[in-house]
Figure: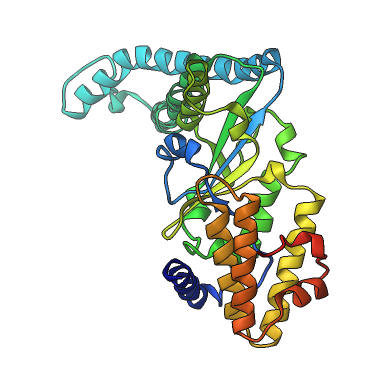
Length: 347
C-alpha cells in the first residue's frame, strides 16, 4: 500500500507540473532499455538524436564517399600549392612593410597611377584568395578527416549500418527542456517526424545532413563497436538501433520513441488516450489522467517487462484510482472507442 501511495504521489506531483504542457497528442516516449546505456552515455543530454539502420549496398555507400573525398583532396592540394607560393610572396611583403628592400618592393616614383593601381589590385586579389582558402575551405578537409574519414576507417562500408543524427544547436538550444516533447507541436511535426519518416530514411545516411540535423560520427562508431561486441556475447544487438528518437529529460533521463515499431494499431491506441484526456478534462479530472499515465509508465518500464500479471495488477490500481475520484474507468474507456479486450482483467 505504501508503495502504491508513493507512486500515486509522484504521479500527482508530475501532473501538477505538466498539466499545462499537454495540449497536443503525446509523443510516445518511454524510458530507454538498459541495454542501450553504454551508447547513451556518449550522447549530449541537450541534443535530440535520431537513429536508424541504413540497408543500402556497401558499393553504393562507397560511391557516395568517393566524391566528397576527391573534393577535399583537391582543396588540400590547392591550399598546399598556395602555401608553397606564399613562402616566396609573404616574407617579401612583410619585409617591405618594415622598410626593407626586396623583390616585392615597388618604386612608386617610376610607375604611373594606372600601373600602381594594377599592382595593388593584384596583391589584394591574392590576399583575398588566400584568406578565403584558409578561413572557408581549409576547415572542410579538417572536418572531413575528423568525421567521415574516421568513421569509415573504423567501420568500413557495411551492408547494414547504424546512422545517428544529432540536432543542430541553432534550434535545439531554443527548446523548452522537459516540456517540448509534449507541447511543441511545431518542432515535433516540423522537424522530428519528417526526419524519421519512411521517405526520408530511404536515403543513405551520408545524404541526410541538412539544416536541422547533422551526423554524429563518434556515436556511429560507438554503435558499431557495441554491435561487434555481440560476437562475444556482450554489446548491443543491431536491431536495438532500429528507427528511433532519443530525448533526455531531467526527471526520467533518456527517453526513446520507437518510430520503427509504430503502426496503425499504435496510432489508434494513442488517439484513444488523447480522447481519454479530453474526456477527463471536460469533467474536471485532468489530474487523474496524468496519474494514470504515470502509473502505467512506471509499471511498463520495470525490470522484467510489462507481464500479464503486472498488467492485471496495474489495471486493478487504475480502476481503484478512478473509483476513488468517482469515475468508472471501464465505461469511460469504452466511450472513447476502447473495447473490453483492450483492458487486462483485474484480479
